[in-house]
Image 1 (tube, rainbow, N blue to C red):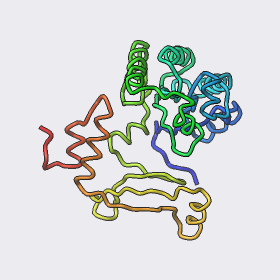
Image 2 (cartoon, rainbow, N blue to C red):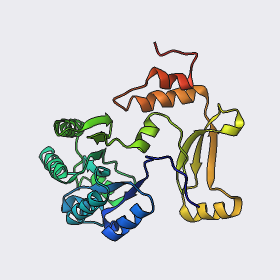
Image 3 (cartoon, helix red, strand yellow):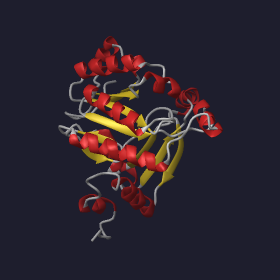
Image 4 (cartoon, rainbow, N blue to C red):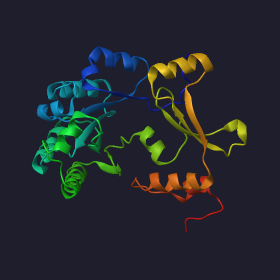
Length: 264
């Protein structure tokens, strides 16, 4: 059945450039999607090959342009920095290229080398040089300086927006709001209405898609773990997540979790 969403609800879809033909994007929009996040990662073909991405820089540009045509003001791009062998000058060039292409939201992430991957093995062997911590810090600061100068608000550690194009679903995590994780590997945090209205749970869905589908068919859900969060755990999450944002933790939000304990 159809989802009954409030007016103005954000419906974001994450997509890779290799799977974002204009016809598919139009179909997503017709189905109710009103915001798109495109996993560009880089606008350099050599970097994309090193990362093992399936798309080219030209395909990334084409995908973002198509998305902006269908979701004007509501298209975000993801970029990676701190790639093995990447210089500060190269990163500055990637930023300038991204500014010419992007809409009003950019997410920046430092590359994390996953154990067991070919790229991690190359860095471990010394075949590719990993940027130092100082270089990584300089890259991050360069990005912040360039994007803020271009009118972007640095509203969260990894996220920048202009013209009010903040991501609602991102903010729901950093504000420790309630959200339900649906689908393989999804995480959720919410308060159960039928159990006193004060028990906040952390739920995690089964990671493997085939196993998750089998569990849903056999038991009606794919929840792998269900943990009741203590008040201390809730406050720790609120502090840790809230300090990632430029708005911090408001007294009102703190009061939702701990009305007896003031921040003052």
